[in-house]
Image (spheres, rainbow, N blue to C red):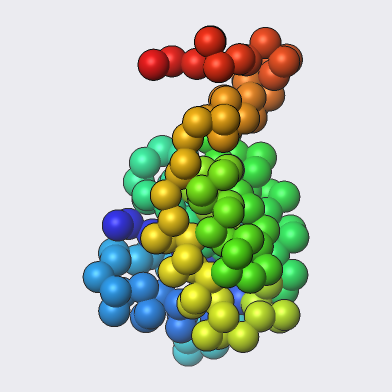
Amino acid sequence: MKISIGADHRGHDAARSLARALEAMGHEVTVLNGGDSDGGPQSCDYPDRAHQVGSGVASGEADRGVLLCGSGIGMCIAANKVPGVRAALVHDEFTAQMAKSHNNANVLCLSADMLGQRLIERMVEAWMTAEFEGGRHARRVAKIHAIERGEDPSGVTSETLPA
C-alpha cells in the first residue's frame, strides 16, 4: 500500500519512526516532513503538509495518509478542506479502527506531543488493517460527500446510493 506521511516540526521525529515501521511491514512510504538539511526538525506550517498529503490521497497518488503535528487538531482541520479527504483525529487503537470501519477515513491525524511512538504505531496498524463496513455507514459517508459538493445531505438515502 502507498502511504503518504506528513508532519510539521513537532511531528518530525514521530513521522520518521512511523515511516520505518510501515516500510518494515512492506508498505511504500513517502514522508513530507518539516526537516532541515541535517535531518532535524525545522519550523514549518502544518496546513502545507496537510494539503500535500490530502491532495495525494484524493488524487490516488497515495492510498492513505497519516498526518502528525503537536495536537493533530490543525492537521485534521486543514486536511478535511481537501475534497475527497476524510481525515480523522484519533487518540487510541479503538478510535483508529472505528475511523476506518465506520467512516472510511483515508487520512489519519495524530498528536505527536500526547502519544508515545509505540502507541502511534499500534494505532496506525489498527487503522490499516480495519475494513470499511459499508451498510448504514456507506449512506453516512455518501452524505459527507454530498456536503462536500455543497448539497443537502438529507436527500441521500439507502435507495439513492449507487449499487
